[in-house]
Image (cartoon, rainbow, N blue to C red; front, side, top):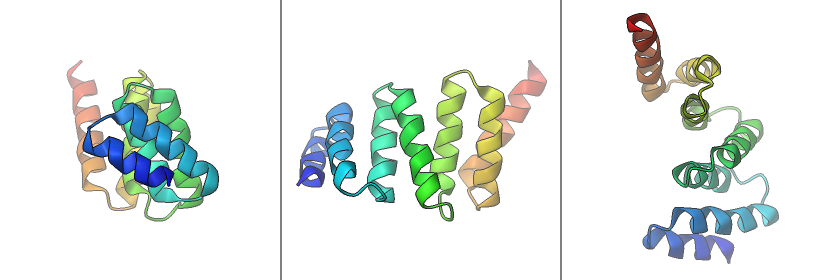
Length: 116
């Protein structure tokens, strides 16, 4: 039911409401990686990075293999919180799982650091 509500909010591009509906869905399915990832992403889009960190971390905990996108996004979120060196750790982990986006983020991070 709450996933249905989340889908409704997605159609109207209401990121925070979507995340909150997913939050309720997670109460009933706490190990659902798709719900955790979507909630984390939508919290991040709503500038609630702390909530995003919690949900990406849970996603990685429950599904350590195949969490390259969550690891990368966790790195992006940490960078937005000015935890740039910690973000590199997660970019590297995502890269090890095959994330090309993470490799790009890592390159930009290292390249930017060398320029400044």
